Figure 1 (cartoon, helix red, strand yellow):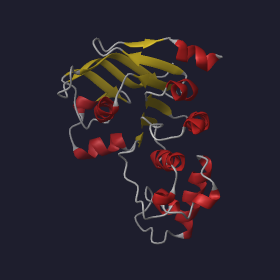
Figure 2: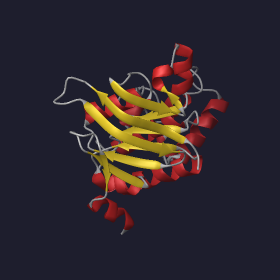
Figure 3: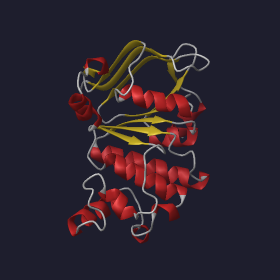
Amino acid sequence: MSDPVLELTDVSKDYHGLRPLRIAGLSLRSREQVALLGFDQTTAELFVNLVTGASLPDRGSIRVFGRSTADIASSDEWLTLVDRIGIVSRRAVLLESMTVVQNLAMPYTLDIEPPSAEMRARATELAAEIGLAAPSLDRPIAELGALDAMLVRFARAIALSPSLVLFEHPTAEVARGDIAGLAARCRAVASKRNIATVILTADREFAAAAASRVLTREPATGRLASGGWFSRLRRS
C-alpha cells in the first residue's frame, strides 16, 4: 500500500471563531477521493491554507507527500510543495475580461494577448478534458454561467498535473440541475489523472457522487465520522 499523500494528526488552529478548527485525524492515499462535510467557507479556506503550508497548526502535525509542513524552511521549498497541489476555489483569480482560452493558457505562459498557437492548443485540450464546450473558448469569463466558471477553475487547478487537488465549496453557485454532471466530471478527471482529491463542501449530493469516501467533521472534537444517509445515497 502506498504512503499517504496527506496526513493530519491531532490538528488544532485558532482563527478567532466560536472554537478552534480541530481535525482529530485524516489520512488520504494516492488517487483517493474524499469529501469532507462540516466546513463552512472560513474553515474550508483555513484547511486549504494549513495543507498548503501557508499557515501552521497551533497543535498537531500535517504531512503532505510525506513531509511535515512545519519543516518547510524556505520559499523555494514551499513553492515546490504548492506546485504539486491544485486548488479549486472562488478565491482563485480569473481574468473576467479575458477569454476562456486566455485564462487556461495562463498556467503555461503570461504571453496571452493572444496566446501562441501552441498555447492555444494546450488550453483547448485542457478545456475539452474537463467538459467545456468549444463555443465557450473564445468567450470572456464574465459571460460564463456558474457551471462553466467552475469548470475553468477546475481546469486551471489541474493544468500543471498536481498530485493533490483541494476543492473549496465547488457547488456554492452552481444550479442544482448541474450538480450530478459536475460531480461525475470531477471524479472522472481525477481518476484518469491519478489525482488525490479533498472536497470541502456542504453539498451532500455532490459529495456522495464525487468522492469514494464521505466524512463529516464534529466541530467540538474534530473527529471525522463516516456513514449517514449520504453514504447510502452514493451506493444506491
